[in-house]
Length: 217
Image (cartoon, rainbow, N blue to C red):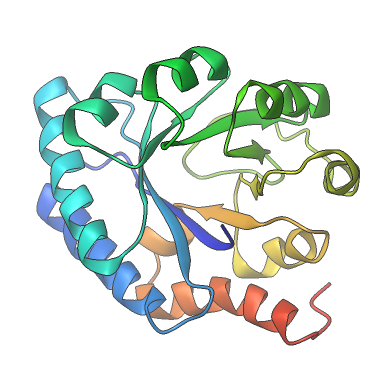
């Protein structure tokens, strides 16, 4: 898993959500690596809207060959046959989710700026661990306390892919990719961009440059 980790905004407008998601997915098709994962995250939706949007996004991701992840809702993941689930600090434990979903699903875990938490998640069966926030976010409210140095530590101790979150732009994500972050998670920088395709391309170029041996830090 490497590249852009696209996360959806809290939009009730399903048509708009699908339109911009498809623009992003289509743009990612031309890049290697492109969009690594798409996560459905809507903290304010009711069950009916969550089911509608998640099902539609899953179908879209299937068309573009991108794994589809559900934030928090393990039962929704099972119900629609999503590729996995992402759990936060107040959600179900990784070991519990792994036991429930089995070995084939992707399970991601928010670890904030806490390396021991990431090690525990890895040991419990997490497929990837997410660190952050690194920068102020327009969407998520949390303390911006994570230091870049955690990625140096993670390179030595973490075997699963690492994700960086929190106010990500192609510019401020570059030093994090250079330090070894496997994926960059973005919401506003893509969904609120004037040109969605250009935003996706800018993120994926971080990893294209890395593969070509270009210095991006």
